[in-house]
Length: 226
Ligand SMILES: [Zn+2]
Image (cartoon, rainbow, N blue to C red; front, side, top):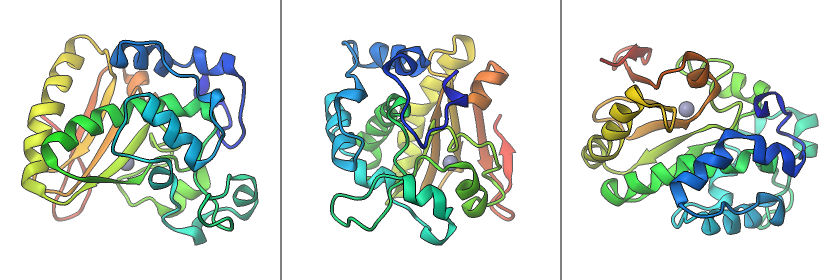
């Protein structure tokens, strides 16, 4: 349902509670999930929402930063919220219906960070045209980023990230293969500083099984894992 919602504009509280991530975050936080509609749709509002979800190390500004402003459709840019620090700067801050999706992936990111050390979110939501303009061959149109179901994360230390993937991702991956609780999608190559983490992304849901891929070191193309 929520996948078809235009994420540039806000919908209703009813759409939030219909989204699978709403119940998933309840499962992860073991408490009543905060209502994103009680927070302003701004970078500061998103940070406050994330703190309420137990996310300590990632903020609204970081996850909604526009990596390549020239690729942003001019009409969409007008509709987007502005950065609190720099009022001229549009933020890729989707409708609040999508915020629980971010909280879910950042819960996994927090666990990775505990082992891998500081992590930076490079991308979260990438609306259709922007996604097509900035994507490399690995991130096809219709990717998890269009629905704000995934983040790309950058670590400082590849070997510590490998250890974190082993300790955090592998158990989720194995559990998901038998009982798809998190519907996880993972893109990571051993030794790389980058990792893509998605939770209950539409492509994963459609397949009914968790997805995992690596990248060919020579071509960068996706390679199926295991
Ligand atoms: Zn990605």
